[in-house]
Structure formats: structure tokens, C-alpha cells
Length: 258
Image (cartoon, rainbow, N blue to C red; front, side, top):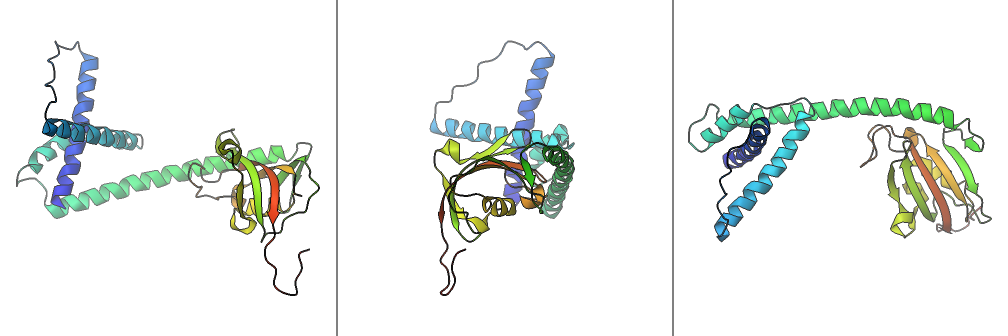
């Protein structure tokens, strides 16, 4: 554990040192640069590659944490790195572990708080969007709050929730940001209709095969407050869906598909 902690602190110091050098160069005229030694041997190239990649990764991580309002003292980091190469140090291994755990908890708390703030703003934005969208001609609203617009209507059968459907679709957020599209991939998607978000399960059952609908799905019928992947929490989702085919679920003996 001690060795791992020392490596982590060393990596942070490398990033801080590189950042500090760049700031000093920007603030004052740089002296005549001394050519860096050539990296000739296997050991030199390996050492430099490890240090450079580590510095870039840790530097990027620290930069993101600074955006949360956490700024570490560069001098203290460098002092810890120096002490890490000795048997000394101002903290025991247990104290180091506890400090790092507290740091992680603090960062995670800030991230969670920021996510909740963003989700609250997204919820307000989505509710305002749906209220206005419901007033548009051609937009229909179901009892659950799902909104949809018929772009073109086919003449085939409608699926049941248990059926497997094959569709082409494009999904966007209310600001137009596209997060998924089978159309762009050039390959339709097939899945059981009762194994997707509730807005899809309800909405696609309204579609005859050959239809193209546009759905406006409230967050509670999509991914809720938690979001998913690049989809933020409380986001309203907009899907253009074309129903291409239905594969009927097997029916128990004595039952028929309506």
C-alpha cells in the first residue's frame, strides 16, 4: 500500500511541476533553453514515457477537481513526494490512507452535489419544454404524460409489450444534442418492447408497423433523476422512431394475440 501511495503522490508532483513550469514561462521571458538530453536507450525511453503519460493523466485529473473548487498546495505535494523517498515523513501509513480516503469522500460529495444541482435545473427546463410542446398542433398527450406526434402512419399491426420490435430511431435532448441513433449506425435495433424505458414501451405500442412517430418522453418515463451515460439526470428525451417489424411473443396454449 505504501508503495502505491508514493507512486500516486509522485505522479501528482510531476503534473504540478509541469504546470508550474508552464505558468512561469508565460509570466516572464524564458532564458535560452537548454536542449533536453536525447532519449536513446530502452531504459531512458521507458522512463520518460511512464513519467510523461503519468503526468498528463494526473494533471488532467487535478484540473477537473479544481473545477469543483478543490485546489491543492503545490509546495506541500512536492514536500510529500520528497519525504516519500525516505523512511521519514510527517504522517504514518495509516494517516496517509485515512487522509486519502477523506479526500476521495470529499471529491465524491462535491460531484454528487453538483449532479443534483444540474438535475434540478434540467428538471425545470424539461417541464417548461413539455408544457410548451403540448400546445403544438399535432402533439398528443397520454395519461402518463408521454407526448407524441404522428409523422407518418403505417397500416400494419401494432405490437404488444411482450413482442420483439425492430426499429430505426434517433434520440436527442431538448437542446438538440444527439445521444444515440441507429440511423447513423446504419443498422436497425431489435429488442423486447417490455425491456426498455417505460416511455418506449408505452409509445411504440401505439404504432402500426410502417409508422414513424416522434416521442417526447418525460424523465419519469425515461432515466429519472440518475440519468444514464451521457444523458443527464431528469432529462426529457426526444425520439424519432420508425417501426419496421414485429416478432410476436410466443403465446401460452389457449391464448391468442389480440
